[in-house]
Image: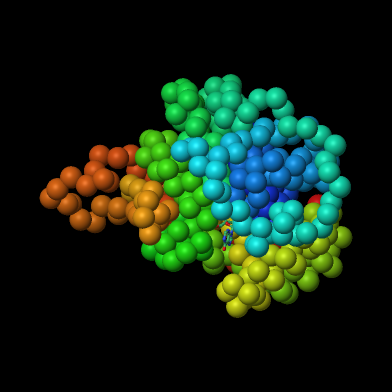
Length: 321
Ligand SMILES: O=c1[nH]cnc2c1ncn2[C@@H]1O[C@H](CO)[C@@H](O)[C@H]1O
């Protein structure tokens, strides 16, 4: 008998690469998307909700609930850093899509996360593609969430490399460093995939042409919205391709064997010039003194990725849609 698909909730701030990840999930028989929860990051939360509903309408999957997440950081910060220069002002490549017909469910993202984890104890994977506010709030608000949640797969961090917001910090962690530190030290089964790994997963110009020439519904849609993302990468990195952060991380939730991992304690700097930096203690040295890493739960952190296999799988699934 075929294995039951893994139930996933995607916590997302769509976002062009978020759109790819959501479509990829909907084309992946290994997982069942039981809901989308929204968060600020690439766009403000209100627009993230609108875009999540829109993407599900494009996919013909309005059966999937969307629960709106926090509009502020866990410390109630409202000076959010929004990456409209990466994704366009609408978050989806400046396409002026008409507003979605659907509405988010009444329940908040945090309430939805807590409820679903309790309904399916140990069975749900949260794929967190934005700042970690909703997940940290779920951890704080209900002690049962930590016990009930299966795995939390996080796109976040820059382990041993420069960030993408500044030399220290990666965008999702920078968005809410306090929330990230709560999640990483919570004791949950956390797998973090940082940009040290996702920067190896590149969609080239040639790949994009291949997507454009396929008649896959998702491929066609994505080709429309990808131009802004390509142009940002050309300006910021001088590359002709784009980084597939979110879809790569979705695949880490689906098939962990596409990546290799290490395990250790991750702490996040929450202030100062290195605010948002992620530091993994690899346990190679036993420190004589207590540190801020001592006696904290460990998480898994991705180290390498089989990039050709990941890009191939993403392409295949988006073209076959
Ligand atoms: O330069 C950037 N600033 C802010 N966000 C970015 C930048 N580049 C990519 N992303 C977005 O942040 C996540 C990965 O860190 C991805 O979701 C990507 O779309």
